[in-house]
Each structure stands twice: as C-alpha cells, then as structure tokens.
Length: 472
Image (cartoon, rainbow, N blue to C red; front, side, top):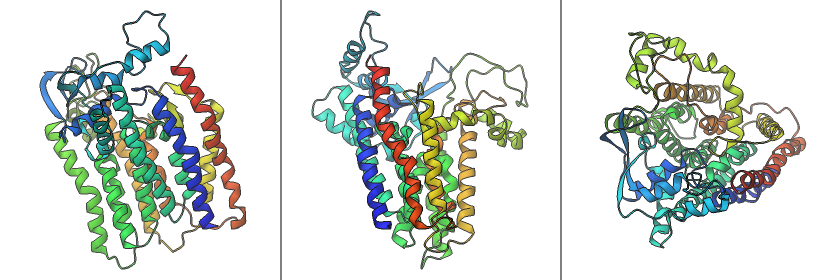
C-alpha cells in the first residue's frame, strides 16, 4: 500500500499538477502573478552579479522616501510588468491579441539602468538562481524580453517539479497533504511564474518531508532547506524549532542545536545586512496622521510606513499589537483562506465559489488521512509541540512584518497580508498531526476522492479563467 501510494501521488503530481503549471507559464500574461515584474528584475540583476539591492539618493515619487532597487534592463522590466498590453498606446478598440502583441514586442534597452524595486530588493539571491540561469540562456539565444521572461518562468518550474517530486517520493507520511499543498491553484499559479514563492513552497515541502525520516543525511538536508526558506522569508525563523526537537538516531543535543543555528543564523545576518544597506519605507501614498496606537505627537504626518516608528508603537503596546491578528484581522480570515486556495491574476481573479468549497473539503480530507496515519516511530511530545509553536510563531511574524513595513504608523490593523504567505506552513502539519489510527487502512482510499476531484476540476476550470480574462 505504501509503495502504491507513493506512485499514486507522483503520478497525480506529474499528470494533474505540473501540466497545469506549464500551461500557466505559457498562457498567463507577464505581470499577472503578484510582484512578478520586480522578481524578473531581481533575476536579471543577479545574472549580472548584483547579489543585493541598493539604496539610491533619489526620492521615490510614490512614497516620498529614499528609493531602492536594482540595476537591470529597463526593457525587460517593462515587458515583465506590462505583459497584458493594458498600457499599450493603442486605440480603445484594440483587441486583447493586439495588446498582447504590443507587449511581446517591447525591445531590450541599449544598456542597464536603475529600476525601482524597494520591496524585492530585500530578498536574498538563492531562490532566483533558476530563473536567472534560464533568463541568461534565453538572452544568449536572441530572445526578446517577453520570451526571456517566459524562459525564466520555466527555469523556476523545472526546479519546482524536481523538488516537489522528491518531496512526494521521500516523505514517510502525509503524501496526500503534500500533494494538495503543491497542487493548490495558488501554488500552481506561482509555480508557473518568476515569483519565488512557488519555489519556496516546494522547498518547504521537501524540507519537512526529509525531517519525517530518521536518518542523519535526511536530517541535515532538511535543515539546509529550512535554512534556505528562512533566509528568503525571515518570518519563518521559528522553524529552527523543528530540527532542534527532531529525534534522529545517533544525533545528540549539540548537533540539534547546531542545526537550529544553521536555520536561523543566515536569515538573521541577511536581515541585518538588508536593514543596513537596502531597506527603505515601502508604503506609498498621500500624507496622513498616525493612528490611535501612536504614542507620540498625533499631529505628526507621514507618507509611508516607517519601521522605526512602528517599533515604537510595538514597544508601547506589545500585547495589543501581538493580538491584532486575532482581533482586528479576524474578519479577514475568510479572505486569507480564499487566497491560500487561489485568488489568481494580480489578486483579481476569483475561482468559482463552489471550487473553493471543493478545495476546502480536499484539504480537510488530506488532513484526515494524515491524522489517521500514525508515525512509524514514536516522536515524543516535543516535536509536535515545536511544530505548533513554529507555525504560530511564523504566522505572528508574518503579521508583524507587514505591520512594520506595509501598515500606516500607529494603525490598529495590519495591511498587506496575503494568504499565499501562509502556504509554506501547510507541510509542517506532517510533524504535528497523525498520532492515532482511527480507521482501518483498508478505508484509506476514501480520503483520495475529494483531492482527486479538486485536482481534476482545477485542470478543467483554470484554463477557461485564463482565456476569459486575458484573451477575449
């Protein structure tokens, strides 16, 4: 049964998930995945040896604050951001095909120059290597900016497919939940793009899958992948608790402490470097007065979110700010859940309501299969507790990061949070759940019905959504 389950999830991934991601990579216009334009610029800058973004003396006209970004090809930046041709200098009667043709015809600029990308400038380079390599090969072959960016998408997709396949093959438990995580419409949309989030979902899946094993090689490889995730996304630093509490044959406390430091230290050092050389205020907008949590002069004005000012708010109201996810943001949980499942385009295309329901049932079914599958070896109380704390801590840090960087100073809410930020947390459930045998193994097939239906229906629905939104 275990062998057939492994083959089944790999077949479902390669037949039902990867082809849809390939279709998205080809057919979704550039710039219609969140932040894809800046991510393409980041890959191009890495191709030219720019390891970290940088501040510049000029002021960002949107935020009124110092700007940051990369040195890259402006033609590529335009092609990656305006891939639908919505801003094309064409008459209003121009068809979608004519606008797309205009976007695809954007040429390379004669030389590289500064491109503003204040948010993406903070990201570490490792997750951009696949896109940068594919982008470089496409440029050498004479591709236009449009097709070079499409090639960068496929660079990411190839690595996503490899990591996802390895995760499904090597995990000791929770294969159905990993398949659902990798097959979410939101994951597929990201996987077929230059956005690093698709790759990081696969990195998280493989890292946790390796930690379900008990050999030392898997432990250290899983630790390295969690370190990569925390380096790219510092709010996931609490994942250091997973290798710290994972019991592995022949591995003592010193080794586990060293593994925890491996997860945490690179992300901390990179964050400090970014704060020193790169970080600038991120919230563009008109002048405003601080919100009710601001402890200083209420007559002050701001044009952006200011991390130092927000830190003052946090130090003055630590408990209230920490509880904002459960108070002010509680009404947004349904929106976050829909975004986890899939709000496509540039967060503009909703799936049919019934499909959200089907995917919710599919995930619950995968969770039920996980709960009904006890670990092959006793894990003790510490690993599940550490997994729960790591998930809660990562979620809290996601909200706090957005509060400091995307929320008006002193506001009693958190802005800028998107459901896709939480998808890498789903694999952690493999280390948290599954301690009881509720149903006999012969009934395991029941848990496959809803997941298979969700994957098949998504393959049927999403291409139609792409056609109706971009090609008519």
